[in-house]
Image: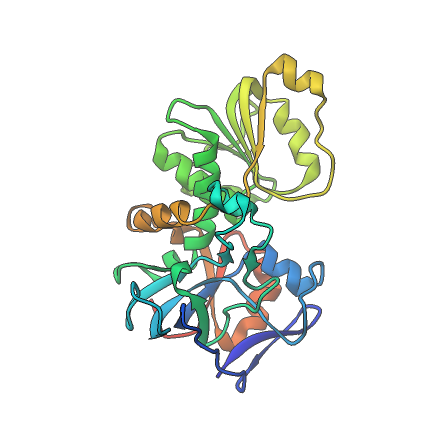
Length: 324
């Protein structure tokens, strides 16, 4: 079967002889229709995150149709359209049993420590293949997983329509956070130095940066360490600061800052199974996250899709089947 595989730093090749996946008793085989690209995919592509082996099948934000079910699968059926939840928590450890599956130390991460799904077919644990209605576009489904990440961050923040929100960064995560906040009624202000990205955020309901302060909710999505300090300076007393973007720098805060300003600082890592994904999928027809998409490429042009994804104002996805 065809697959897009990493063969070297910044080199993805579309091959035609990749082995077919094996269907375990608790798995389904998904005939893939499309896969979105995100920052972690680009990190693997560029060599800053090293996969376990090469060649390596890329991608994790996938969707398609079930074409086979394992012998123990009872709640999925052939022909069902599904989106893939690509973080397979063990569901047995203390973190999973507490409901914090996002912290599972045994988590299988598709595309990073397990092969990706940018292929014509992929084996997926059935409980991590979420059924979706047929009316959704390929662009919406390609954004289902990152939409869930953004929605989980907003859920964890406790944001209401009354909050004054600042979003730092208008990459894919920032755009999706802006979309979710605007639909919640908390129209956010966005900080983004890249003019086309800032313009796209405004089309999704964000306000341009006018220098105001006093924000009760701040979402750092960029992972750009120098951006956090100036954002924190704009926080109201008692504000909640949600960190979504990753970097290894220390926080530009002291204990005195946190105590005197009564700040709440929390990280938001992916989502928790199954609640976050099932709730996000249930509202895709209303939220239409495909609005953050800028470019679509066929599987045969995977190299071009990856090579330019970081510079595009919106998100990129790769279509594997003929889907709208």
